[in-house]
Length: 444
Image (cartoon, rainbow, N blue to C red; front, side, top):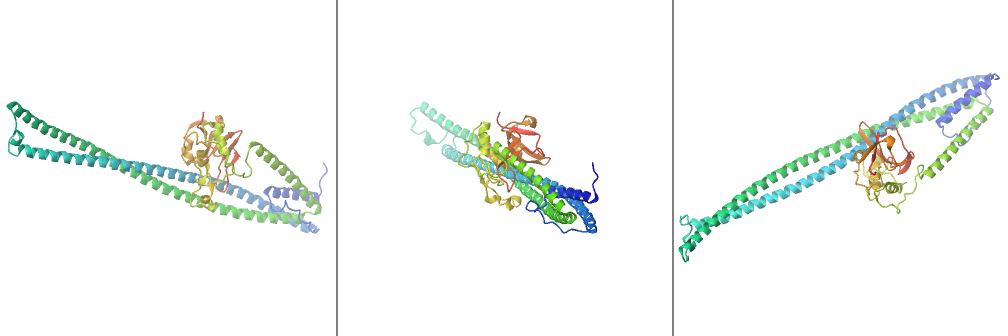
């Protein structure tokens, strides 16, 4: 191979540096080729080479820093999603506790009414007995009042009347005794109901505290995410600034021939990228979704049913529907709710749509009622290893802190999901980073 001259080696080094800049995505290169610089002296070229080498080193350093920062931001995003789902869980648990407390209160009120009614009946029977005793024993006779025996036709009739008085008195005493036993039982029932109400109210208080703690944890996670986003923005700005300086330094190093070569290299790279985009677009179109938001397919929503294809058809009917945190139920998309952080910044509370677990509630409406929390959905059916997952299973993402995302598997490495605030319901390739080891199967 012929040896390259000094200038040729310089041009090759500049081409390598430009390839680095192109791969980092310098703004403006795709629009037009920069104008050729003036013809520099050897001293200027040597100085510019040293400057370009230094700038290339800076770009590499900043690129590495930015990659690390983006990894931290991705981890923080996962943490925010986890905290948002935990806030969903706390909201569901608080509603369960409220329902339990309401039921216990109703039972306590019913038991109190029964106890009061028993006491009133005892008082009535006791009053009747007092009247009987007063009328039967007012003359000090153990047989009864004289008036009770007046008019007896014979000794046999007289004995019958005495037996009747004794029977009536004994019957009322027995009734009073039974009433008192009933009052004791109803009093015990009233006491147990009040105790159950106290326990339910304690659970409700604990659920409210858990909701407060979950909201605080979510706010802290979002604050950390905001700080990291600001740091990433600053790093990106520094990187773009140095890339621009690198471009200017390289323009000083190269002549018109080198400029033309770099443009041709860029053109070839752009052509390859355009071809790849076209291939991906065709693949997405053949598979029914993915790249760009599509208009929601509302108005032709498949009915709820207990088979896999009906579940998938319901989920796919919402492609292009906005993501709305807290949105979605068995009937369809609903207005999102405020979270005081990320969702609010994207205006989710003004959007009609789904979050990840809300989309699953809608899709599986004909199979079973799912709670609006992905962590509970993970254990709502039979769990199978990912190696055995099949069309219609739910896939989950999370870690030691819990579940923070759920999607519906379509087969062929594809899934339909409501990813995050600012996004929309779409078909995506299955992401295996952070995926849970089991899929959840509700059908079959």
